[in-house]
Image (cartoon, rainbow, N blue to C red):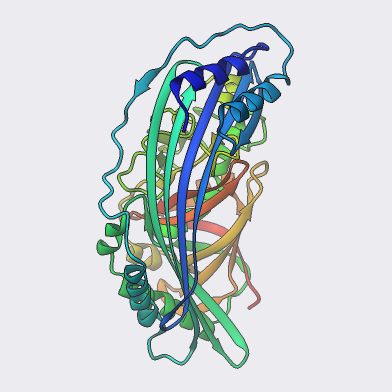
Length: 458
């Protein structure tokens, strides 16, 4: 996409007016999407190619960013000229050459498959989800693969590249009766080739999605009150991700817009809570060999035994915080400037069992599956829907409930976690923030949170 000679010229042009750092992010991404809504037909199919280059220039705490899909020498020099015009000063840095840094990437075995293969895979899952239950009124299966290749070059002499191949299967089931409708969803995926689908039981996952939709359809409304909540493993981790994780990103911390500003080394959670962000997990949905400013990804302990241990820091915000970047800078594409983001974030395992948590709960809610939600990173206030839940009475699971939501503050619920299980599991999702929508793993073992506000209409 770009030669070393041209890259050197572009970066030096970018630094001509006093910038102290410049960076090129070169991207080529192929994305294939297929959607099935009927038994034997793929209703939608598309393939797209995204190619372009983004340029970022830093000067002290200031930053400018631009991008182009005109990757000709003229197009790139024009971009560098336009951006450098944002500064007024004399050159303080010159690029002389580059050091190529190779990274051990993931082993992708099956990256090219036929449309017939895709159709067979989706049909198998569709039939398993649809089953013979007449309450399932609609099933939608989506299959997405992306092959992203990036090259990152900067004025410090870095020249490094990475390949990220991801696959994900979305399973949506809708159950309906007498004008009432409920839905359930699962979306297993990995930074891996199509061989990933040979490592999981797709039929069982599809059946569980249908069962969840039917269970919620038959459920009664959840009562509204403060109660103890047992959050199941896997996607239950979305609560920590949204309510606490974003507030640990330098994106908000550096600007003083986080409830956790200035609390490094202080107690922010109960003693049993250890939280980790790890971009190095093999085949993790949010994993990569390097982040989007060329630093190796790493495992970062955010909270250790209840104490705030580290933030997620990118280079630009690290300047303001006077902290070193720790391999967490990410972006959706070359069209967006990168910033600190989570990758595979989870709460570490404890020693309790799900049965012990339920038995220890006199009255509460068992949140088996979580839905979407929202959070204010400045205040930590959140609101999450429970897509499948059950009341707990006298230490036993009671009836299923629907319409439940969890309401509270992230910095408060961390102290109310009093039991953590040993069944750690991660689930896949897409996270939206200032640098776009990116793949992330959220995860946790089953855990119990005391005295949380549960909203409902029952």
